[in-house]
Image (tube, rainbow, N blue to C red; front, side, top):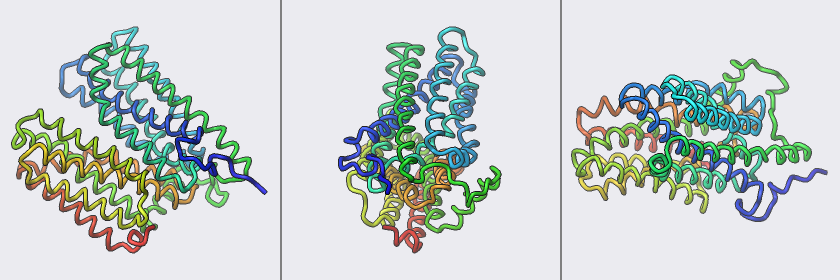
Length: 418
């Protein structure tokens, strides 16, 4: 007879279990590091060169490897196990940040050098994101998945909310070198905390639980066939297909309109560009609230929660087409943020529970791809619709999301989800 490790049967809440606490702290710190570093990188490149094309190219150097390597990284997660990839990616982040710190402190770096190191950090992110999501079912009891996901996503939302202000203030007060040193120290603490997961996994493996890599029926597939198997599973399963479609639709129809259209809306109707910061802070606050709500009271009927969350996001985006006051715009954007975060916790926790462990890395890499790789398409859509006015932009995109909610409501797999 085998006994599962304490992490799976501990009666206290997630923060009362030291193993889960280290997991939450590690992933939370990693999320804050991402938020701070992106602002630091933008400000540093602006210091090296005039605002313009070079700034955009450096940011692309981060985003392009992250998007291009996500699906292969999902295969790697399923091959090596999520803990190994999570910890390896966390330490790769530390190494890249320390190397960048040395270059910044000891030399006069070129934009090309900074872009190269930033690209390596993007590659580390590509491995880390799906692995960090896939590691939770191996460590966290099923009953606690929603709460732990909510705490981690809440830390990410908090980082997005305060990160820009903190990073900018630190650069102004301490300089680029010291600020990057602080970010590197946080990444080091995250890597140390995440490295303790190895001990938990070894205990689970000794107990006979299945948390490691799981080849498909003992067959070693090639990387291409393994990736095809993951894509095929996601397409054949109505629940997975529907959730991925919802995530992709929201990303395409919301990110560009809110950022690009929001800037135009602020200039034309809300009193100037300064109001844009207030409106976007509403998104961060709504995201934080949505994450915490999803963890505090997980929904009993997840399917209808997914439908309602998509509908709330669509209604918020469509409503921006008619607002004329900052308070109203902030409230609507807060609704979009709340719905997005709540939906994100529900979708990820559901997939972690229901997708076979041997395919989890590949499926979750698709979720991450749908959330980070479609931004350029969203910006293009916003650019195409903006000449027709912000009202047309927001109503069209909001209506598309509302249509997606209606289609989700017709799916038996989503409606019956508990």
